Amino acid sequence: MAGLNRDTPTPTALTVHGASRVLEVQYADGAAFKLPFELLRVYSPSAEVQGHGPGQEVLQTGKRDVTIVAVEPVGNYAIKPIFSDGHESGLYSWQYLYELGERQSELWQGYLDRLQAAGVDRDQPMASKAGASGGGCGHHH
Image (cartoon, rainbow, N blue to C red; front, side):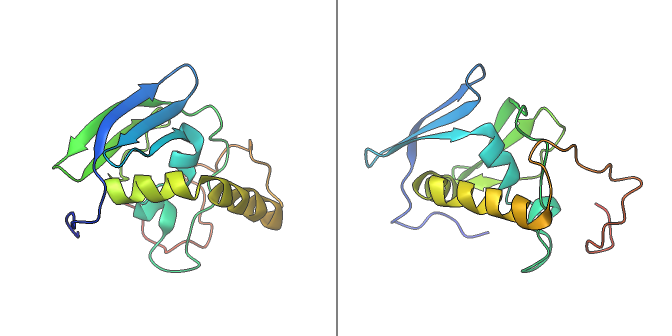
């Protein structure tokens, strides 16, 4: 894992807004982002979501109502949110959160486009891991 380089902005405040389902991140450079839990969840940097290479991404659905139940700090460079659906393997670096904030509308559109391309409804529940062998990378974590 790359540590912080000098250019990585560091957050001065992190606030979990449970009712409105956003993670508010304020940075030392004055930037402030409100990241919806759903966006954070569907763009989780974990292998479970990103897969093990380009084109291996697992399209996440049914995450509109997902909440963050806890946020654990990881060193001085990242956080690990614990989501209400049990997902907790994503490490969100300060850099990654900043990028999500800056590119939020573009990423959101990308997510909706991918749903449409897959012919999947945003609110469709994910297939359970047990029975689904959906052509992923074959090994379960």
